Image (cartoon, rainbow, N blue to C red; front, side):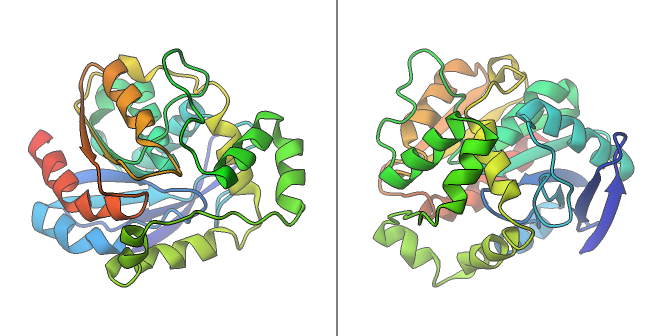
Length: 275
């Protein structure tokens, strides 16, 4: 894994990862709160398919400078600079959880540079017609994201209050931590080492305008979502599927927020077929 610190046009630093192997580049968009390191459980599949992972810590995480007020569209421009620095012209995007909406936002913002998008448990834009955004969401998530609605200072106070987030994982979710996806624990723990700012700015970004419209994406999209997910309810995936003309939704009724990752290999094989 090659890791570099990229100086962006506005002076911020972006910590970039690149496996450097494979002919078909795929940007990995990480979840909340994680580092941006590409997913080790998918390295073998990516090598088999000829995919090259590249990624970065979103602003505020790991080695990347915070960028208060960042949006899906502004982060897409960070991605554009990262891809340029690596000599990558066109690429696919893959995102998990909150990273899914950053992947979709990048596809909407960067147009033809994004060849295909695959998401697992992506979040729909806040406040859109036809979606009860908090419907079916677990209480800890509702409290956290309602705090974000108050803005960055209110969200900071919420995080500093000592409140504990209970993800209420399903049995299927918990079983995933006994296998390769125990890797999530390492990137989640390290994701908070630089402080809570990445998480705070992520959550605020989920409840403000994206700065782009996922309905304008022209690249093919695959949305994977679990029917038992209460962190990001599957209604978000359904809304995205009905409002993105190029999207296909694969809803697995028995899966939760973590166990949906069991279908990531299928998602990468789909992605490879689009490239």
